[in-house]
Length: 244
Figure 1 (cartoon, helix red, strand yellow):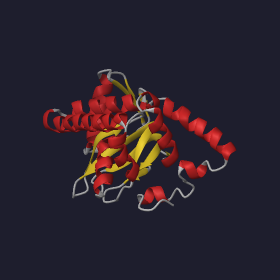
Figure 2 (spheres, one colour):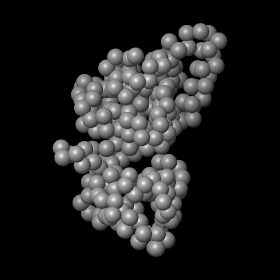
Figure 3 (spheres, helix red, strand yellow):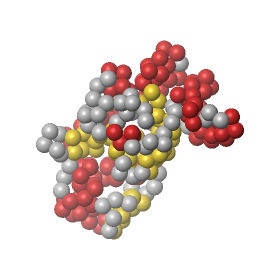
């Protein structure tokens, strides 16, 4: 068990750092090749070869199912994820318990908020929930901090992550301030379809309502309207997004 990880991570007792897991040479060759292949699918075009080698040494690979919590509000973080597959939604919760989805993370993303929390040893003010089955490499904070000065590609990657997350936060604020619920719903469905790379979303009306901080009745009524307009095709526990 890796100390000070969020409690949901600690339940995965089989996790080891990649260097520990690959202690046997014959296993190291096969597994390291597999992981390099996963990294090369996106990150190898971004990071220097030396940085990729360090990621292989200090990170650990893990998978999560839809609905699992990566980090909860009030928990401390010692690692940040590099998303290899799937999507994660970032949720803000008010004191009264109401929740709102701010943005999604997908393959090629990391969470800049997680980075700040790790560096400053702050508790998380957001909840990260797996939206579609995800796979990620988790990197320890003591290394990601050092890499800022050591690797130009890592520095640019983190800065870009801040930039994209800031834009998404502004879009969330704009949605609340300037969009009606019909527009917010359509944007939410479009964003979700993009990060999951599918027009067919397996989702209930209640799940949509929870993410948008509204009622199921409102979502059902608006989906029926969008269905009649041809923008979506809505059936029980499924929404096909025709326009996004």
